[in-house]
Length: 474
Image (tube, rainbow, N blue to C red; front, side):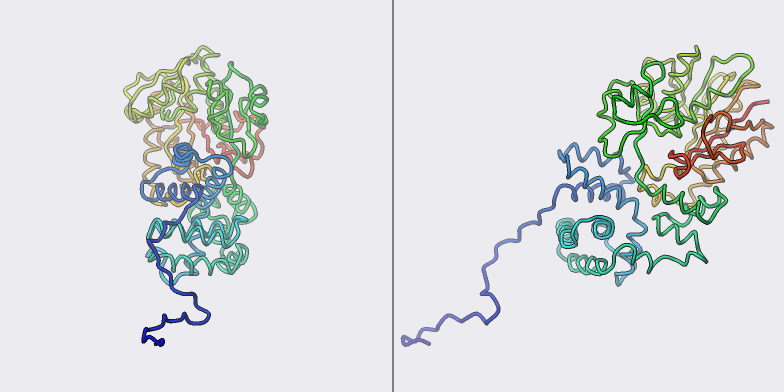
């Protein structure tokens, strides 16, 4: 009390600031790059979206460009590709099973842990931005948990976490390489079985599959040469495909390349180019005018076949079950001798007597995991059985449509033995078809093994892991 009997204002305690009146909390400011990366990961999880389709769309819609776009791309693809490793580290730091973590929080945690382990982003920035993201997307209830996990993760670098979590390489090489290269164990096992190796070559294959791939272009034959395309784009002519060009890292969106806009070139992995070219290289006796692409969507191989057919006087029929994908083929092959049919390749209704048929069958896509970073965690071993049944049915249908002496080329983007040698061997046995040694139709391509099949690999050839077999109808 003062002399007037009035109560004096209380003094704040020493060392503690006087309380302030607080207004409503401002929403956290999330930088556009991390927000885009988070939204892509969420779309992949919730809608089974494809990161390589959603990311460019969001970058355009939100006008994210330059360094922010580069960061969004790195965080999106890196986090999607390394999901298994990131989850193992998160699980080691959490007090609950990872499957019981709120999915939205887990998406953000993966982004945060990726920044801590695989980028040069400072720890405070990685942790703070992730906590802000969780507050904005999941609510304040989860920020303490997020902060605690990230602080625990930051006590070790990636090498130390790998040393702690990786199985013993001597007793479990597949498990060790799978974790170190962020592959599901079953995928690593399928690579080992296809290679016949659990050691250095398996390690090289998985490491190459975990690296960011170059963009490959295909020059449209008779319209532009690979040398001309390379000169225009600043790329390099491909080592094996006469129509291929490899773009340098960081070359930007290939859709913006002038020859691509003008339909003189397209984006296509060199391995896919080689398989399509092989279709046209197998020698035939008699007619060689009717070609068929039995599983043509979205049209990349059909376009290359159409361009080659145009120069040789042949015509290509292309079959696609989905109407929207059929329209893509029509657009891609405009001006080429290609006719598109909307039908199931197993019951196309087409008139038999084709000279050459390509069966680019639906598959697990294990050979293109480096281009579809989320696919390795989306696929399951149980998917393969249904796919091999479909692949066998399509191959039988093709052999029904090809003329005696004609050839069927079977292609899948997978090294899984059930989808490759298993399907072809069983079909050849049932139909008494001749298996032609495919290696001679891949001239100058090294390390093709003992045949009669061709299996390409990222670590050997710099291509997707494409498989190619050639059957001749008796």
